[in-house]
Image (cartoon, rainbow, N blue to C red):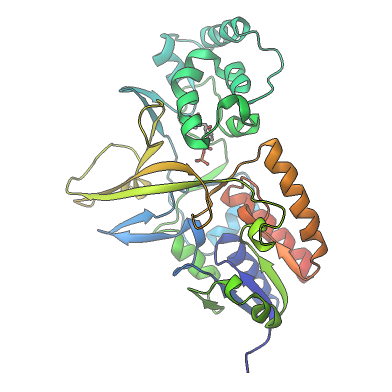
Length: 368
Ligand code: UDP
């Protein structure tokens, strides 16, 4: 007979691992299942030529929450990596996020005052008073030149929709700074786990039973019988058999190559912000850990609309999808024995720190 568990956790990604760890700490028994052949979900890293490759795209841990920072540091050591991507627009190189280096390169301005005047003038010429979408938000933050060269093409490729049809919160993820500071994040704490993210999740799951290559939906009724409660971290619409229609997601395809050279692009992240280059960015993985290997591994990222069978990465939080999500959420609230969590379970553009914050708070409520 199958063992009975307190919790069945569907998905061995960050949310599932944090919840399982907390449950085990409280003496609960957990079974974690994942349809993939590895743990760690989309933060999974594997080693190639001594380099930790972020298989599902670059993940840079950053947070303002000291509790979350202390929590992850219990499981592994983080290095001092600071994300400073550069943008390549048709061969012109700009610093990201938008800061005095960007403004100086774009307009030759030297002082913050000059940069502000330039942006204010462009915002005024565009006639924007109250930004209603990503395009208007972007222009009102950094002006039309930067919008055209560094935002419009990239965003259209990334989301497959015009900037006018996208919510403005997406661009507000990026800081705009009137200092010469290329740090992509405003967070107090930032870094990459030394030796990769898989080790972080492995340590969270230490002593917990994990079954890989195991699809919940192949045998849902049987799995449900195996535990008192389910923590589900997959896509919320998939849970309900897409009965109200499909939520939209963006998927990403990676073309990863090992090159027989030491240093390909001199930076971990280079964004290609024109609309003609088919990929959005190139990641050179070794630079996340200051690698000195003889070879290098790079990944080109191609963004695409998700269709069944693809890997979902980003929820598309526009009005239409948000309304549909609310309907699924109402169904989810009626499932008293199931907790829905994580980027896919809650259909939210969560960063890793937020996933941990929410998982810890849900676990606290649930387990105390
Ligand atoms: N973005 C942009 N140009 C860039 C980088 C980002 O226009 O060079 C916009 C784009 O719309 C993107 C959003 O800012 O989706 C958020 O970027 P972020 O780096 O946070 O995206 P992620 O790393 O989560 O894919």
